[in-house]
Length: 234
Image (cartoon, helix red, strand yellow):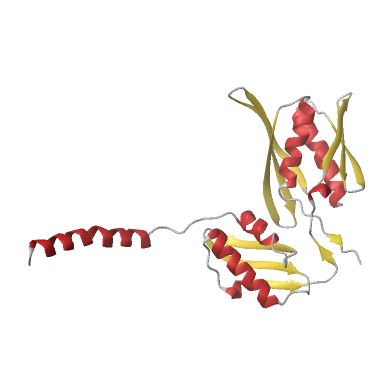
């Protein structure tokens, strides 16, 4: 065998090894809420729920209007997951239920926004507005609680009035941390509904009154997952 042939053979060995290593890479993991958020952005989808274990998607349940064929909706979801996340999924894992009369489009101006936050005699009162609806939430400061935790409970009181489902949200923990010259309020909530549970995290830079910052941090946590179902206008 010539010297040039030996040289080519030696150069080929690292390439084959690299290829084998690439094929042996572990699967990429993902968060189901990230997939749900992207699927919900599809025009043909009203709402989506992804059921998964580790890196495997078991089921995807989709609520959609009757205006689009189910096969097209399934293909849209397959394409989205492949292009956006590099995930190939068996179309048989996707279940589509088509229902008329509801939608989850949530325009930016319809998201709950803080109108005012006040504190009087250990009671924090917060006014939230969404569209043309205004609700007031309040919470009393306990001996163990502080301004941040009390404000978070006031926000939850208001949000649960909007959802008309009391008791689904709870405050797990709040704190204030220093990062360089900045102070940040963090809020950790738990969303519980039936047998489903999810942790929600929100944060806001301290600016102005502490109760204002705590309200923004709590709303930041809730707004990440808040979806309003409303009757479609005729």
